[in-house]
Amino acid sequence: MSNTYELIVSDITVSPDGGDAFAVAEARKRINRYAGKSRLVSAAVYRCSVDARRRNNVRLVYSVLCVMEGALPDKAALSAMHGSFAAAPFTLDTLPLPKKQSEPPVIVGMGPAGLFAALVLAERGLAPVLIERGGCIGDRIASRDAFYRTGKLDVDCNIQFGAGGAGTFSDGKLVTRVNDPRCALVLKMLTELGAPADIMRRARPHVGTDLLPQIIDNAASRIEALGGRILYRTRLEGFVISKGTVKAVKTDKGELPCSACVLATGHSARDVYSMLPHYGIQREAKSFSVGVRIEHLADDIDSAMFGSLAGHPALGRAEYSLSHRVNGRGVYSFCMCPGGEVVCGSTEEDGVVTNGMSPYARDGRNSNAAIAVSIDPADVGGTPDAAVEFQRMLERRAFSLGGGGFAAPMCTVGDFMRGTCGTAPTIVKPTYMGGNCTVSDMGKLFPDYIISSLRGGLRAFGGVIRGFDADHALLTGAETRTSAPMRILRSADTLTAPGVCNLYPCGEGAGYAGGITSAAVDGIKVAERIILEAASRP
Image (cartoon, rainbow, N blue to C red; front, side, top):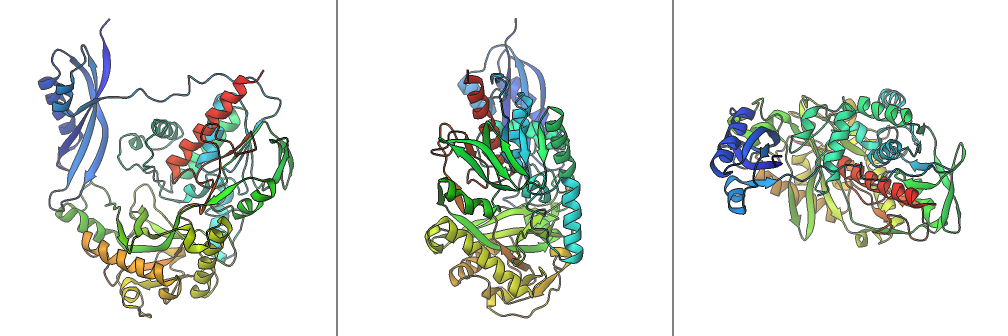
């Protein structure tokens, strides 16, 4: 039988007019030149990214997956063709089928971590119970629309809380720095749930706010079809712990007996953070970030990054990722939303929180991103509770500066950089809650060290992207929920909280992830541990 293997041929640079066919043809040429007697069976695009480092020479960079037959090429041939052997795809099929448990695993939180943990557990027959303080997708959309219309916030069902978590009302970015084979499994599972197929090949994949609700609904239906249960509008109120084991989860609807508990509440469940010490569950403060949203015209960002090729269909909307250090402190762009809008992510009635989202087409007038400043725990008191109170203080200041009613404080970049106030928006119009903003002195929002860091960062970013620090660009605040300000401790081996053998802190809210994909990966890892534990029980 012939030896069949997969080879990835990388670093194929193509003009935007060249496209997929040119990249595949170039891969074939390299294979024919360097692969010796091996035969190419098929070739298809594996990954594509945009290289906009040189504005006047924007290129597409491809990797092509080649199915080969015959002898393996040697090291020199691989180097010459810029090739590498494709890793075997990560699969759950090697996991044992667990024994039926007397009680189900209970998952607290239906963001990416909890959702993917539930999907994996359900697929392997453990029929989890998933509780979510917010509502189903339809309930969330209705709550959000009512909030935008009336200004009355539902503190349990909003842009942060509900089916899919904070990621549901976002750009749906799936970019991650996590180097884990489960990342490809997350993308595959998302496509099976209805995500666009192109997320499998894009170097910076995204789903879009308009498509995510249906995908989340499909995931919920899948869990329930496999025997799992989802309890919406159900709040965690505590645990029943005996001899180092969670016996049940306390909720506002009653107790839920459990064989394991996955704590995947997300970074905004502050009430959960505050209850953990009562049960001896250990936490530690960690670094986090705060800042503002910046808005530009999307066409201006496209032009600054792509030059004369701006608007080319092969390039799409321009994306950026920027970082700089000011007096030893990191300033960086985060959650960049091309062609998107700034949204209100508040969960408390006296605080304004900004976030960003964009549809799959990214066809909005503005592009936005968070410009965030790194905060060390020592900056804000050194304890988990002090870090949360620092976030809360900034949100309340933003609420006050905006004048109440969840209007956001806003200013032009020109005013912010000069320390002045009062300039109304001109070229760039605010998108936050349909323009529900108040021209404010943003210098009053943050401590001086954050203000100086933001100014230094904006100045540096203007040297990288022409017009980034233009006077007419807009800043809106406060961006405070970029990541969890604390970590819930867990064992590196068992993934359980110290002293509680079946409690699994999980995902972004527990401090072990930083976005949709990494949170989903963490949910899968925790589900694997629960399955292995269940399979080992007599």
